[in-house]
Image (cartoon, rainbow over all chains, first blue to last red; front, side, top):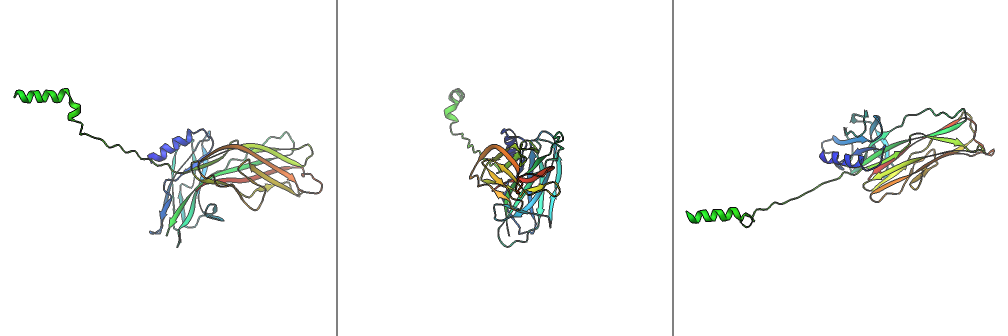
Length: 142
Length: 151
């Protein structure tokens, strides 16, 4: 916990702004008991409180890319929450993987910016909305 | 008694050699969890049309930080166009990192191979892709997700 807070302080003071982060100390978990419990810390450094969503993903095309969002037998507490800047929120992901070999998973936190109405003075135009997501890969052993 | 007093006085006056056997082992350890951040610094990006009406474009900025090996993926682009609009191609580029102009496939950056701190420009556009070389009038929007993954 102390290390996580120190890391959070280092990240928040390191000069970049707006980002959200998922801190994950441990990178390997065992599924021997049937249930995997992953603790992570979530924080951001935007100007005001924002809504963040935590999700668990399986591997995508390869073991380096997050793939589909997993929801079956997955419990995330809290899954969605509003959090002021520079505060650390603890999140617990618990799930029951049915695996026979070492498998990668991804703990992700996503920030979806709100759609703002853009005044274009009556002219046609367009807008681009880029959501940002930070994922940390971890491995589960059977 | 005199001898004892003398010995005690010497011990108090010159303690260093007498207590030299005392030692303290100092060990400091630490661990830093890996993380990565990708952020769109300015929120939604407005795109304005060219004088020829063949393209919408706009710019923003991004920040990418990772303290270990990581990569960034841009999801498939979701384009919203006016009803019955002529064909067009959306594009998002995080300059010097990753670009995507596909509505069906994601694009991925190379691995950072270590620590990285990078600020850059986001360039976004919608380019006509029809024989009239024009974008149909109306409102357009692109939505996508940039995901950084700490490996």
